[in-house]
Length: 205
Length: 205
Image: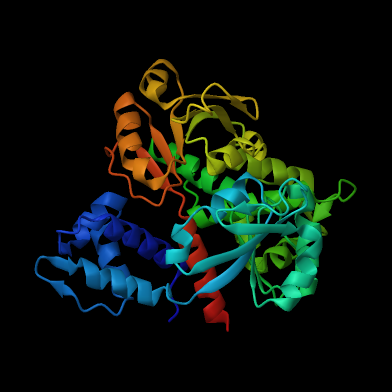
């Protein structure tokens, strides 16, 4: 089904809320979710209509059912393997983010050019020499590269991994990559996010 | 001006492109920007209409003018101070992200509960004891907290900084914070971002 990006974003936030709910509570109302996220109740109800969710009754949504419906809809059970390229702070933060596994992202290994990092393990994941990335992509079935290298290396690495056959790049660098059209690129734009946040502040004043 | 979030996001991506352009090129076409970002040319032109930009001619936009117009529109010159709470990998990655300064975000200090980190400097920024956060917020004019603590601490810290008078929380934890309405919260939802990316993949197939 074609679900708008914003809806996917909100559904994952609803999932955070449901995960956090006391296990002795069985139901949650759309207005409770709306209140926590400071959005309209009608928006929550509209988003939930995208789900195959039958657990609604007078007192609200069945938490367990709703959680499962979100998981099914957003494909949490569809496991995807990824390499992190760049074992600096950001790469290390992402490899330690155990929640990813629950949402279907399995980080297989990391790559770096720093001899002090190569051969180490970070959160149980090996750090390989960036010089071997071409070969590793070619011989593995990993399709996603998470790019967390310094900006100056971003374009060069993107070229190498594109030629090696990577299919998807989750780009955390503040650099727009110029790779062949068949490679999907998702720009994780922290600057844009900050600017959205601060422009919202100004607007609300 | 009320600029939609998605437009702000794209304008900041256009800015990345302009920053990256060879200094000997003077003009860029909307179609070049559109091509790099894989969006419609008409979208780029529409977004640029939000700007106070007069540097358009037959061969394209004047790069320098367009850059300045984006900077002005998104308030890069409006400097904002922030504390990072949590000096782990993610907090350290953010404090080392020098680009933030160009976009108006000045990180003043970090806070952590790890005695090995307290008293250190990361990228020139001091790491203070989390126990002092209440006092520090009260006596400073810092209004933004960037929350990068482990999930289990997120709600407790959010309560403390809210009571101390923080105004904005940029929340990197996978936890929905329940803080008073007058405090702005911006959820940086990496899981949602990944799911948007991977659901897009599936859809494109």
